[in-house]
Image (cartoon, rainbow, N blue to C red; front, side):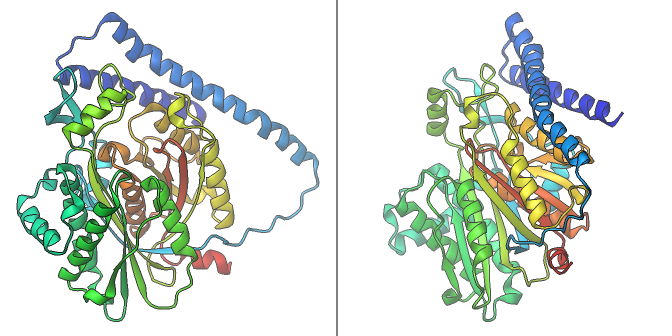
Length: 450
């Protein structure tokens, strides 16, 4: 009975996603769908996706079935529980600035109510002159903030940053997150180093990254930190999501020699007509004719991290890269996510049944959503797909690592509320895959001792 219910929910979610996206887009652009459009987007594509999922499941079950038979024939021997080998970080605090939430509580409520979705942009248009779907944050256009930031950067010797409108919008949102987290951590400021690790958009120049880092350090000082106790650590090169995973691994493995708080910060803005024109020319923009395209977005998300000795929810993560880009095929393949999740749960001695929710940075694209759903269906069958599996991508649009850090922030929120362990998945990137486990304070230490 449970299998039929889960299958029915998956079918309804798949058809609902395609139907809702298509109808909303046709109404928003005032475009009448043709018969071909109706057949393709309302029936053919959802059925093709469901058929692909069923095929993947059938293939995935063939090998486990034979392995189970062999295991049944072998004598039963006690299997020791794996000790936690993945280093942990403490998730001390988190903050977001998004279209659908200026606080974690607000974002959690909006996503739970399934109200986090793109809107027709009031300014940006596609190459046919129709409004495009975006995730625009109203507070990013803060003229008063920019009036203070622009002359400060020029006075500090950063006139070559050449920030455009999208750069200023992203930096405004990042500044607000830093101000909140740095201010909230002032109680620990005495003798503690605040290390800001900004995950700037991949296309920002070195001069722009340097200028942004200097400004964010200034924001922390304005929040009350001593300037000599604030440093900026450049992120590893590459796409922000991969850089975020790399930084989490490096930070977790570092030996603690002095009190340090690390502010891992993702920020981005694609709310720019030139960017929309470029996406349209490349064929990557979400439109009625291209529902698997990308939605320009913006936002900022920050995590305040410390060593695991802090009394805070803990985070442990593992990552890998796909053999081929997920953009090259519409088929959902959760193989890498399953391997990462199984490794993570084994090395942290956490039973899959103890996972209370799954958060993913997946956006609206069917293969990303179904990849996360397949992980939940096969490895976490006790989760309710309609309640316990959430995606942050629709709340952020295309905005680098913002959606992944927002998912981790939501996981921390759930752990603080006492809901138990949460798995977080990064699968929106074409190549990079990451899975993180967030648990309530003390859970990681208890598992290690046990």
